Image (tube, rainbow, N blue to C red):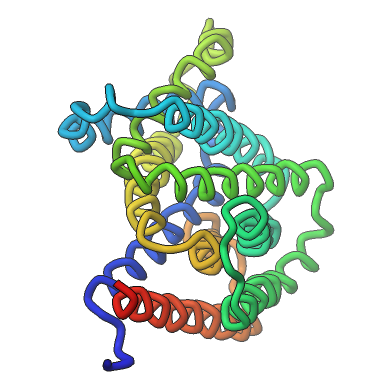
Length: 308
């Protein structure tokens, strides 16, 4: 059998990379939004926008909702609590305290945290190639940001801890999504999780909205908020879950290295943070990591086809 990736494998890899690139935009976008919007109000608007964008696509899968098991609903509730509610709040509050490049530093822990969770809770097999790819991912994204972190005057402790907690929520989001999308449509999972998070934010959002002057919000912040809901939440969740449903949890963990790389690049573009040529080394290491994980995923897919 040829060692070339199959068409199905290429689609899966494209989904995994695109999903994480979209999630990476949450770092600079969160910082832009946090400068103008009350955090809890912005979080509620984000999930409302995301839910509305997902609705036209998810509605075709509503017929399967009565067949969802109690375990499915439990996992979707966990995704809503951690992946939607927890991640959104922690990112918005955390990115008010630290620059975008510093946030990307903290996000570099995502591959390792998620891979450990996949092995511990999903029973994934950690091959040498996967372990090497995950290690390279962590080394690469840390290398990307060392210079930025050093020139930022030191990361603010609370901001770093908040973003780290958001990364942990992202890991829960990925692992629960991996298990749930085995039997439930990825877009339906994303829609239901977003919809369930709306009432979680509502009381706090209404409290912050009361008497708040909406005219103080800049056009850039409104655009950022719409993207935060439609791009990172709706499109990002849909594409990422579609890819995760076709790969193992530890394989998906390796591709989470794309998220902090995307965050750093967009921090340069959107926040005017300085670019450093030394970061090219970090990008190169991460590229090797993604290529290695892609090769391992293709190999596992071919082995599965031979066994079937």
